[in-house]
Image 1 (cartoon, one colour):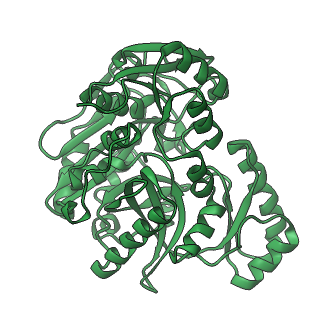
Image 2 (spheres, rainbow, N blue to C red):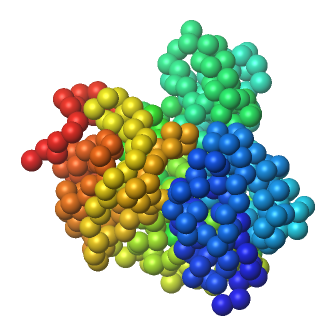
Length: 459
């Protein structure tokens, strides 16, 4: 199949690099994997057609080093770059540099990244498109005086959020005026350290909110949604458990929510895969747009499982110049899927990182199961990067069936001998609140605080 791309450089690592290589291979695209000195043995490096070292282990000297990634692009002769998620995936300057080098950036335009990747700008775009947003500031907060005025207008508690980046960094919840100045300074400092941009904005903090997101695809002219996911089970604003569709969302509100995502994507002429994130207030039966991720998401497999659409494949086709070949009326929800993240962390020791050698991996296979990973038996997990080892996904005809399949799969899964978050998930999959869906974005933090211990699944 002609894709418009013949050789793809993957500017990422770990499981998402493996995922991209597999999609590229199916399309007949040759792959180039960049690696740090710590990553020569990762699975993606073993799979790629070509491997180029770009620097020392610290990400700032390798995966975040634009000059070194561009040098690898020139050396490889690749005609496209897929940034995956994290690292340079939402860096407009990098997207421009790739284009200036004569290659295709697999993602939206730099202008769209600037407009929608910056959360304050995205909020303004949503307002213009008629998409409801959480009450808050009109753009970035430049002075403490403005912060006081905004917070007083919308009422406490408020949330200070980084305008750039994501992953829960640069966020502070403020419950009184006395806390605001110090929290504003701390959020700015964390945002600057994490994203190179200390800009922040303020929103009302919605208690007991649920986190819903909509997956969209666009080619700049045609736009569709692949329905929604729920990602409410989070720890320190990092997603832990994701599922699709959002089972607790009323049908009429689901249709309205997904339509708003397509409307916003169309308003900015979006091209590629993107995710629009919302908070759902069940008490008011209302949703609010909070941000857009202008890249592939970690949790994209659950959407693929219920839609039958390969999102990474579509990204490559669109980037190569193809028109979107999907019609909204043909994209249906089939069953229910749940994804859990297996991390190299020890839940019994406050989630302390546990990098090191993987001696054995046992993951059940069969209908309705999927395991996305970048590791293998004998691989040594480096201590320099995100602790994600893999994602176990279970599908069922409905949510109870998916939970039961996930429970059986978790009981049969082993990754070790180092501790992982599998013990946490064996408890969660049996928890009455999780089973009934009575969760919110704060639920897991409260659950952890009262959990007697981790390590053995409950009966």
